[in-house]
Amino acid sequence: MVDVRMRAVFKRLISLPLTIILVALVAAMILALFFGAPAMAVLETVDMLRMRATTQAIVTGVGVVTADEGSRPKVAYQYTVNGTRYVSRHYAPGWWANGGTWTGGGSDIKRRFKIAQAVLIHYQPANPGRACLEYGWFKWSIGFSLAVWGMVFSRFAGKTKIEMRSGQVQQGSDEKGPPHIPGIWRRSAGNGMMWSGGLLVFFAPDILPVTQVGKYLAEFLAVTVLCTLYQLSQRRAVVTPDN
Image (cartoon, rainbow, N blue to C red; front, side, top):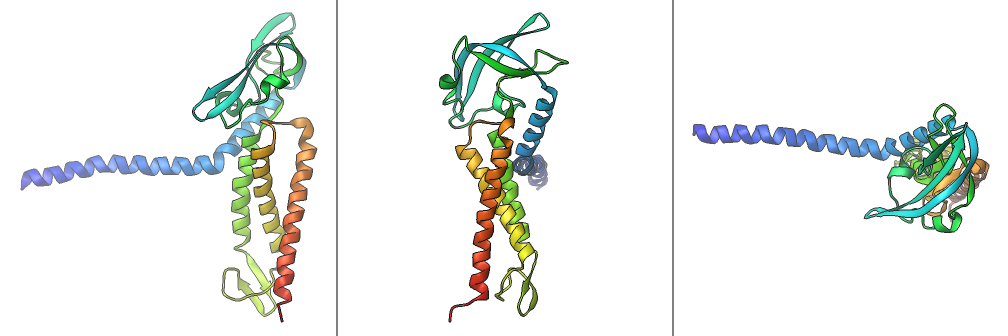
């Protein structure tokens, strides 16, 4: 009997750390889902702010790194700052575009860059050895952040109070009525973020250049307007029921 009890206690002691590990893994996955991509975008922004200086460089190698999860571009280049020659393979600001792999990564790199080609690079004035070939944000850092937080924002926007012709009720009840305009704007903004993020991930180039920020903002506004028009059409359908 004592031996059976000792075994039961031992099994409990073993299962406790496993439970803690599983809970920690799940928590880490949730944190990575919601905060991983935004954290990468922040790091890329900080990196770009540090890489304010520019100079000419010469491409010395072009290739693609492949892995089971995907691929990424690999470009070597050399440049000179204050009489000192540097060699770098740093492709873009941050970590993700330089250390990770993704589907279709670097698929067009050999078309865009050739050996002995002159290119403009950015580098850190305080640390000239730290440079990047592409100056912008990795599309997954921005696109995934927009998609995930757009879904969250749209979901929470749908939980706010809405006006009904018969009074104020919580959305999600069985009563039907037209949502008020602020609720439409919130849901449209969330849906605009979600769809814009998806478009960036699947159709944008690997790096979103700083010089094209205005273009991507215009696309986001266009998507948000379309989402708003759809929400308004749904509101009219509720306001004007079929006879």
